[in-house]
Image 1 (cartoon, helix red, strand yellow):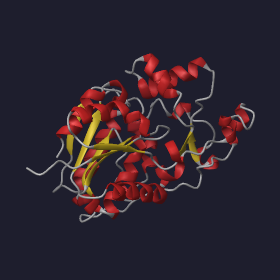
Image 2 (cartoon, one colour; image 1 turned 60 degrees about the vertical axis):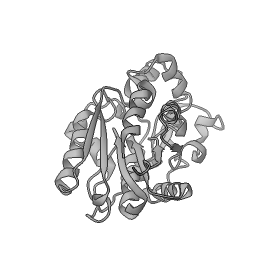
Image 3 (spheres, helix red, strand yellow; image 1 turned 90 degrees about the vertical axis):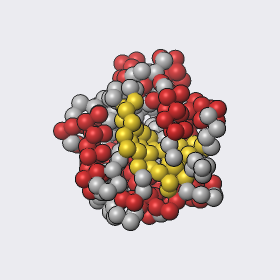
Image 4 (tube, rainbow, N blue to C red; image 1 turned 30 degrees about the vertical axis):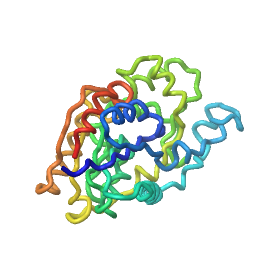
Length: 281
């Protein structure tokens, strides 16, 4: 039996490769090779606005108006970085697991270089249809009432980012953040994770589009891990991604695994996430 492909774990907006630490421990115990990488504009590639770092006064005007230092980061940039990270691993194709806003990046990479991807896995992630920006799904009726949109600061188009204020001492705002992302995560762990988040997610990643073809993205085996308690990407939106993909590429249907979790199962149920991933071909 051939060895299972290595796993490349990619976090979503505002997070970093650190969020996969518990999952990678469980994967190591299961004997599955895995590496977590940083998304463009995050982790070791993060660039923080002045108000967040204390180089400018932290007040409402700066939070809502300062142009993001990530405003120039595009979907092209993010895909190029992920492609280079995959190539550095070398050897056989890898299984890429994308969470949330990393979904469009995985889609672009799988379309451009399908030979690098053994399987594309979307963990409650944006999986946009051909030539549709991920941002368009946040405006659908199925997305109405999500818990993230009310927390965004400023005009995203003007500042070039989806911005959250993780530096605030507003207790109600921080509770709402935890509910949106970490509803089923231990409160102490949720607070620790919040302290590691960066404020800006590059709008360019969500605004970019990819033309999907049968010999590109449509040829790559794909799995979607739904999260039934997600308050950031509602289950109805997750279902729409799957339905659109299967309608476009019916000869390569999406395999679906349901997780009883919030938007961040890598923190709330890392053992279950690892077990699902370890079982993938």
